[in-house]
Every structure is written in C-alpha cells, then in structure tokens.
Image (tube, rainbow, N blue to C red; front, top):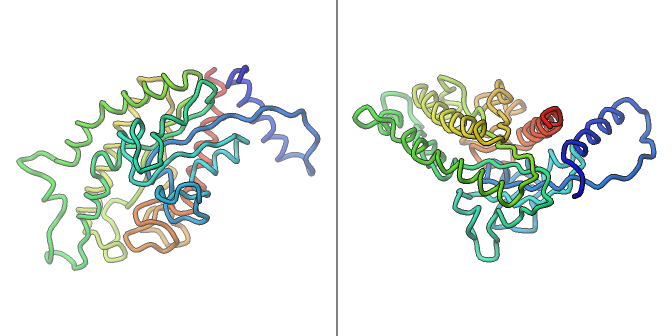
Length: 290
C-alpha cells in the first residue's frame, strides 16, 4: 500500500463513528482495505469454535476467532495463519506438511500484525492439565508443590528462559513487515484466585498457582513489547468475571469441562469476540501514535 497506516486507520475510525450515527449506510468513496496478518497459537485460532476454517483443518482454526472479529471491525483484509499447537519455531518452519511457516504470510504491504505465542513453548498447557484433582484435599497432590523444587518455580523458570525469543520474534516480524503496526495479544484470565473447586477440578492453591504462571508469561510479553515499539493487548482485565469459574453464559475461557463448543482452557466464541473487539480498539487507538 502507498499510504500511511495512520491515515487508513483514521479513516476506519471515522467510518465506524458514522456507521453508529446514520440510520442507513451512505455512499462513500472506496478505500483500499488494510492488510492484516494474524499469527500465533490456539489462543488466537480458537479451536472447535464454530464455524471451522476449512482452509487448513490441521490447525483447528475458527472463522470466529479473534483475528476474524478484529478484521471485520476494522474492515481489513485478513490472512489468518494462526495454528493450534504452534510454537515460536513454527513462525519460521513448517508446523505440518503443506503448512507454510507463519511469517511467510508477511509482506512489505502488511499493515497490521497480531500474535499470541508462548503458551506451548513454555509448557503452560501441560502444566495446567497437571493441576487437575478430581478429589478434594488432601487426596491427590498439588501441582504448585510438584513444580517447585528447592525453592525454584520450574514453570516460571521456563518462561524466563524462553522470554528472549519474544524479542527475536518481534525483530523477525519487523524485518518482513517493516511498515506494520504489531499487536501482541496476551493470555487471559483463566481461573480466579482460589479457584472454584469442584466446578473446576483444581485445588484453590493450584488455581492461584496456574493463573500466576499465565500472568508471568503475559508480563514477560508486555515488558518486551514495550521495548520493541509494538503494542500489548491485555486480555486479563477484559476477562475479569468471565473466567472458567463464571456461570457458563458469562465465560470467555472454557474450563476443563467445557460448557460451550470450544477447547478446554481456550477462548470460546464470546471470548474471541471480546478479544477481537479489544484488538480492533487498540488498532484504532494507535492512530494517535503516528
């Protein structure tokens, strides 16, 4: 595109404002849509949320994931290459036969990039599943205790060891899409402090522990993003009151026993809608930054 991203996003903001005040859409001058590329793992892809994206069934990607929600709100042309199970390695290497490295979707014309990554690299999903206890205390064992050895939290240690790759990833994105605004979407509010046993079969101490690990990863993402000129999109605050302990109708994140068609410990349709809206708002707000 031969115009600035700021001008295009400003036009999108004006169009959105007009749409809310006019009773019927008015004829407007045609503008070229933003080129938006969505990268990342299953938090972005929203596996099992209907409808399913038929373009790559191995990635278990939804046509109602947060990238699609954001793209619709922005009137953007979306290339969604997010893929369930992806790690940072799959940004530059093929995840499945016939599936290109995700960064291949970026070009000099890309205007917006979003990415959620790190949950699989750091073993957070496996750690969370290891916290399941079907029976109340003291029957069973605490994952918080198992993951703490000689005073060292091994899960947080893995996150700290992986954190430098965030900077590498942002540099790689900048190289391939030098004019793009980059938005790193953080991991959300999975389960409230103290949990809600037995609604979610995780002991109180372990619920607090696993959410603390998620928060630690999001904090690492946020800190690095600030240093590299990208924008961090917080989804924890967005999810307060909508975690896996909330009433089924209020949940944005599904629990270990899903109440909606969605993968456990992942955003459901409502969660994807909320995250996509937050991402679109962040993109529009970035117009003030130039």
